[in-house]
Image (cartoon, rainbow, N blue to C red; front, side):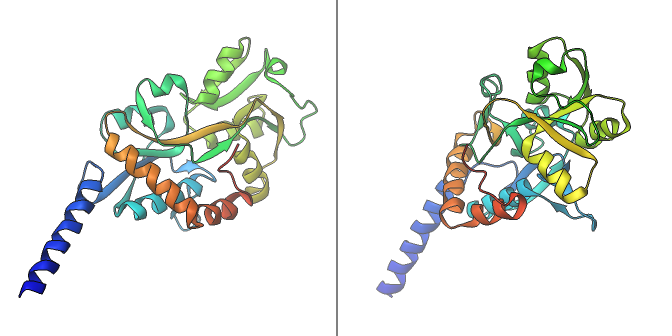
Length: 254
């Protein structure tokens, strides 16, 4: 009887500890994850209609470490940050660049990937733009509200054409309606290798930049839990496996 009582107390203590460590989410036992679903190779639907990608796999791995069921909420990039603030989901896992401006309004995990912006041109383009100065006076497609859009506008003199997502501006690039596009270097390599799109990478702009999992700034319990989960999936080899699957390299370091 005494042994049973002791075991019961220990079990209750462990349950209380687990409960104390469980982050606050919109729905108990669920991690609602905002992402585009149209941004290969990070988050997109395969030929069977299944949501796949590097960010999808990272989100699932983190949710598993948190003991939460992942639930994906798809939305266009242009409204994804507003959706987080409107409590449509708990986090965004969608290559969200960690910038000083964004950190004023939303919280971020520790960086889980790094990449550099790159200019994208048609495969048969005679001119390979090397830097943003070369783009002055040109029509350049970019995702609305993205960090890439801000970079183009800050450069000045570029005719910035915004789109809901990558598929739209890549289509216009291929058809010649814009002169170039601007996005993540990892995206460019994937498009060329996997989809055979008639595009190529041109100038890589600046140093590698960090991306993180975004959440509402006041949810400190979620930050603590997610940062711990990211360390765990790196330590047990899960992160390296996911990274090699999608990029053939470790993208966790600059």
